[in-house]
Length: 347
Image (cartoon, rainbow, N blue to C red; front, side, top):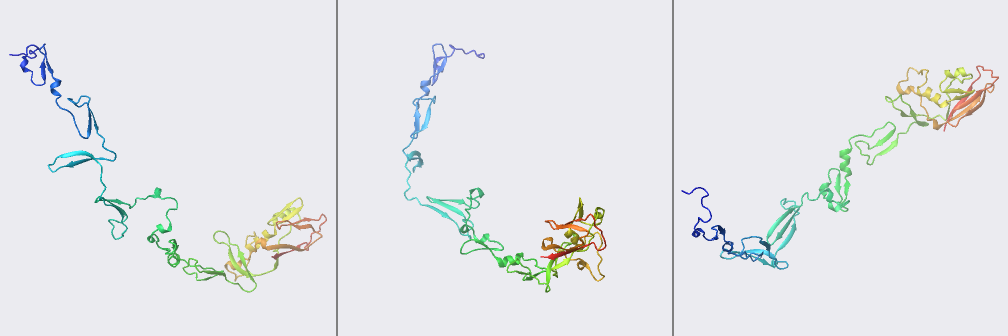
């Protein structure tokens, strides 16, 4: 019996070398490459370089180019045999079309481009195809906007294509409040959007003027009322200090090196407007705002000193902002008749 690896060169009979094998003089079996490479690599569409009698060692395959504009086409004959050749395409008889669907009733083709080439149809959906980045500045013009864009309160102008406010409709939608006033006459102010609204000041009584009555802060704002016009009135009475120690007894008065400065308007405003340190006393039949006296704005007043005791006061004058200044004479003899008459004139 043969042991493993017992068949060595020289032990094998030459007849054992079949097709593709040769035995050399040393009894070694070798592949006969000449016997194996019996075929050639050929093609009508592939360029074969070195394919003759080849076993695909170092074979380069490339498609053989056709003529300019030709396409590689496969045809099948009646027997079912396929061939691939370079051919020039023919466009004779080709039917091409491009159609934009714009029928609202046909949602299948609305805003879609249908392309037909040689009887083959393709559809491109244009819905949502244009985004913000694609729109140029001011490219959405009046003719581009569909009338359906005009919602409540708007309508598309048939002539210009612009969007116009539909005032009758807006008036109904927006007019939810009334215009009312105690000093303004409002005609047609009910549920109005200020369309054709006429505002007029409600007239007062003959000789009256509109005057602002100050409130007491956030809880009671200033009000405007008609009051009887007065061309002038006397300054409310205050003590005019004659010695420095009296300054602390009067509001809105300062003394500096013998010169006394009195803010006349501030004292008038304090007394009439209810801001005085001395409580205002009114009659029993006065209620609410009727207990307040109207305060005329300072810019509407002029201040006059019509008389003063010249044996007591001297250097009487007004500053540019309307404050009264004076000094006391060195030999002044202050008596009950030492006073001033100050008149406020309404400009």
